[in-house]
Image (tube, rainbow, N blue to C red; front, side, top):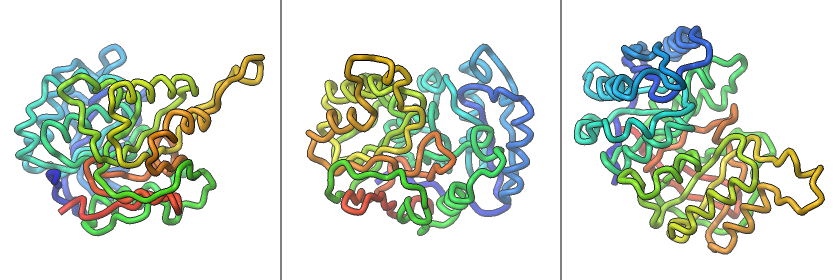
Length: 317
């Protein structure tokens, strides 16, 4: 059973951190703080969140210290990430996992933040949340209520979890192999999941429902990533697979080439169907405006007869 954090309440102080890259536009930090206030929380900006150090938001030690200060500050009830980008795997050896274990808090992010989700679950047994970020998502004009409402409800209402497809009206979901299975969720950005292999921060895949997504990876790269997971013997351990909306998973050269080029769906069928586990594709999460907040380490049922992922509560106390 993972370590479940306390739920957020309106008026709580939440830390805004930049554990990976800095936002392209520095003004988005202030816009992010304004959205946090609009959501009903008191934002606390980490000390180094405005820094820029190459393609990173500060040095490794600065970004790691911001993260640990947020976990150690008793006033801070939740930790939100400004954006992903690149750099969180560099922080993993610098973190105090015992301190994180002793101070479980709501922690939210996705993309490059997947490295932290993996490490928190493996080293601190902390349930964390794969969900929207502020400079990447919430500050955008017309960001869908679908994502905002689920973000707030799943972090504030202990019994909220349910179907991630409820009220989702876009025709993206497809069933690649039918079946129904329940288990603990593990996953996030597939490139970052693969980067955890062979490290002390690699989470367990055995009996888990694997969920994954990525951005702007062409089909053969997905084949390479899935092959790496297969060659490591990990795909063979999962109970089911839920694939999100993988934006940009198109080979731009496919129409111009005379040789046969597989589509993203071709790759999924060819690499995953042989596992004989339930498999659903196009679910509303990932680098998309329709990005459901998903508890990494929480339990769920993957219903590949209906094409849905049903989250089981509680995921906050």
